[in-house]
Image 1 (cartoon, rainbow, N blue to C red):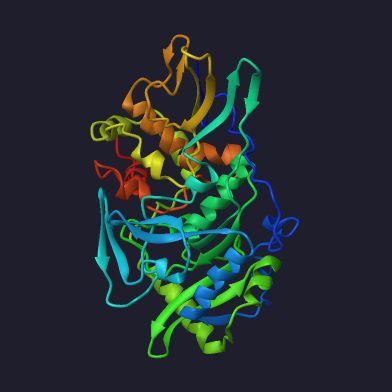
Image 2: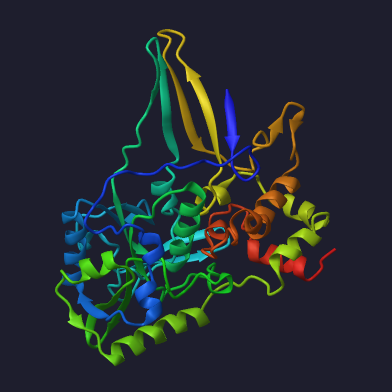
Length: 394
């Protein structure tokens, strides 16, 4: 038996909350995050590489599994960090529609790259999970045994995605060390979605990396009491006004170098008004319906639930795995699939992401990370498709 759940299914994924407490967690950290930053009363400090290493060590001492960017399999992916040396120092990326390549930087920046193929969704909403087992003794729910995470190096687009995904799934956000973006990629458009390149809230600690004649350093500020507690335990120097001005300047420069932008008109109305546009068929001529865009998207949450039985010993399991609205059977009802054509499935994905997500969750489902553009084998660009609709292409 298979049940599909998601943007077009019969419900939501429901809570899947990790348990446990740590002394770096407040009672309601989601509400508190970013409050100090918004008030402007959080003192910034400057960390060097040794301080960054101490940050990772402190989070591990608190019993948290620290996850951050690493260089692996010719990409910047996410994995557990043991020390700052694990970060991808000196590596950047080149992106474009259907293109992603690592490149050597001319410096040793550890956060000098744009979004990679993997998002933090894989840790908040695992791709595969066994929900329960069944044997002669009955049903046995499988406990969620994920570790308590600290995410380090979260870019502003992904910071927004974590907030959206936690809202959808009923998750409590992990400890988050964000990094303000100073290196946007060619496919990035977070500025036009209001999700970057600055990180204004939703984090426990935010870093801005800078390398110049004064060395390799990170301007750090706390966005929650938990973040203040951790920063207070690190070797750091007080930030001066020039440090803060340079950090703001770097982030603003990144805004100006953003590679893409969504069109200006209200996307909700734009998508609703173009439900019957012939443009969807033109997109479908290129779209492979492979689902890559939904797999790399940091906010797509659709799943399928399958019951699997071993006839030899009578053992059965109920498993949940990621699914995609591009699968022809995802919308299958008793009479067949609701969206049999590729055009209908692409329209569903784009319309939900940019329009009807507002009706469900009060916000857009897109954060402008550009992953769907870079990892589409056909090079389909969601910003170009939205712009075509805005131009009134017949």
